[in-house]
Each structure stands twice: as structure tokens, then as C-alpha cells.
Length: 186
Image 1 (cartoon, rainbow, N blue to C red):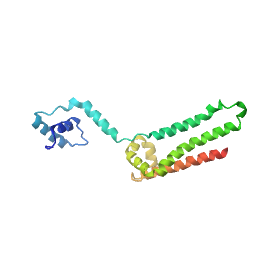
Image 2 (image 1 turned 120 degrees about the horizontal axis):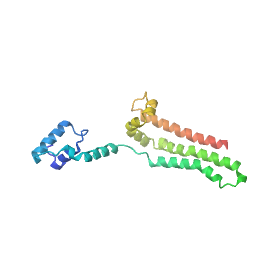
Image 3 (image 1 turned 45 degrees about the vertical axis):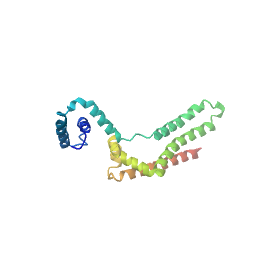
Image 4 (image 1 turned 60 degrees about the horizontal axis):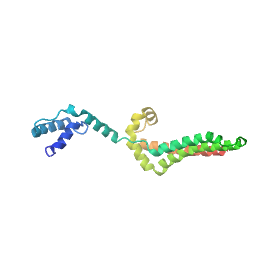
């Protein structure tokens, strides 16, 4: 600590990050600051700055939901709502088969779009997706403790990313097959 600049020691002292520095380190920083400046600043003077820094540090590791997932969900909702909107454009004499084809195709797309998205993430980008799951594991435990706990109760944490990736693969296949079955109904 003696080798650090006074400004750096002041920053350590003012941020008061107890996760990064021990109580003993703060005691040493305090003694060095008193020796160099004559007095260490009060910790209460910069509480807002410390809180902002800690909040930023806490949020730094959190993963956000990918924008592509929102795009897939919006596109799916749009395709589900498309047939009722198109019914107003179709003349009444064509309402029989045309409406059935439109409705079934829209329903099939509502399964295919998420199926292709999850399939792409789980089959073609499996290493990246598994890494994202591993990085998000602590947040998943906090956010979805009920579902997470029920689905992975007997699994050690090291197997959870592989297990969730397999579930994602199964889900993508199931969605694609449901879409094919719906098209076969036409």
C-alpha cells in the first residue's frame, strides 16, 4: 500500500469496497492517508458515490435478454394476429378454405419461428449458449428458484448448463414438429 499514490489510496478509502479489500487493508490505508495528508476523509461524505459504484459493479456481471429473442417473440405474436387482420381484406365468398389455410399456416409459423430460433441457439451455437447459461447460473437461481429448483434439484451445478442445453434442443425439435403437424392438418 505504501507504493500506491495518494489519489489511488483516497479512491480505495472513499469507495469503501469491503468485497475487494479486507478490514485490515482499510486500516492500513487509513494509517497511510493520515501519515501523508494529516487526516483521512470521513466515509460518510461520499455515500452516494459508493452506492453508485457498488450498483454499477453489481450490474456489471448481469446478462441482459438478447435482442434477437424479443424479435422472435414479436414476430411470432405478429403472425398469430395476422389472420384476423387479413380476414377483413378477404371477400366473404372465399372465407372457407382460404381462412383455414391462413389460420393453420399462421399457427404453424407461431411454432416454427421460436423452434428455429431455439434450434439455432442450441444446435449451431451450443458452445456459446452453454457458456451464457454457465455465466447466468447464479442469476437464474435467484430469479427462477421455484422452476430452477424443481427442474435441477438432483443435479450438481456443473451439469446444469448441459441439462438446460438438452432441454433447449428438445424444445426446438418439439416446436418444429408441432408446426409440421399443423401444416399436415391442412
